[in-house]
Length: 450
Image (cartoon, rainbow, N blue to C red; front, top):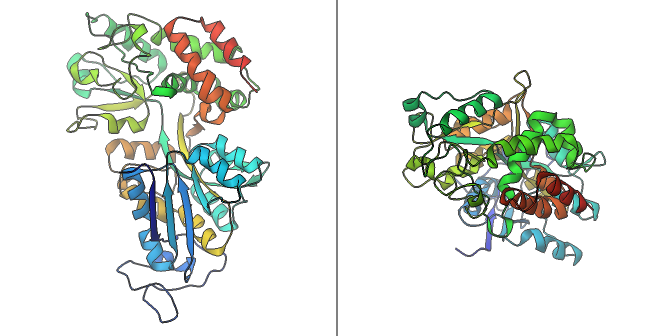
């Protein structure tokens, strides 16, 4: 399928009290109302009916996920009469700047990182969210999530989908056969790692790790550091680090590097199935965990989306071929903390049809419709975890919905691009390659901060 998708469809909207829009049913009318449909239009009545209205939704989402996105609003379109013109291209993150500057911005954009969202807001392109969208976010999302769509106390963009990072993948049958227990603290994980290392062979090591990702090589290493900063120093320090108020060379961040280095820089612990520490950079993140299936490693740190990388026929479940546990707490008494990612829906125009679509996409109705189609999860608290397409998806949703869970957005996605998607990545490569010491890497990254 082409990397660019164009879809014109009829969308649905789901949320209460959308700007006083007229209530309507789903049967066809002589005056241009929605055409007859098999859809249950009850959830969409409050969005109103429209004649000849279209809304462009712009996104980096392509291929199968784009098709599922289009399906997620099919009933909404049928019931409201709005046509959603979906444009998906992997170049959307760069092209939105060109389009907005030329006065050709889309009506809505699904933005994959808060840094880009904030830049577009600061440039004056994104409009504040309508009250109906903010009401949905206040009801269905945590303050953490709302904050990522807020600038200078003005709320602009609702969250959409999410991912949970920091999973540690393993083989349940291997653990059972060798009497290993899933660790509940970081210290227990290190004790388990040391025990596993006693069984090392020419090819086996406890951990398998891969930083390779083309131009983005190094990003999997940033996820390790982010997980430890959050767990060891807490959300306040984490947020100060993102803002540049806590430097990479400060003790809190150096401590995280040292703790991660206890694993990643230890030839006795990595890199099962591929070689030693020097193979981390040349091993792609896609292939990095596969030696678990061959018995050449036991543990791999990667996000929930890695589930799609396992070969066809691999059962991912607590008693299957592969399962995962969240990176353990460092302080046993601390609450649950997870890092992750997600998208946000920003508006560049404010017609009633645009606001209706924007409101629907912030609702629990949309979240349940989309997750039921498979392949994604959301942190929307109105989402039924049982609709997730996998056991790991259900577990991820339950973590995101937890009342005591502290969620922190991927730090590298929040940092200025010169750091988050540049020097932080390359710094991790230099670090595991041994071309720079820890102190040299931290000083280097600090020097690139705007």
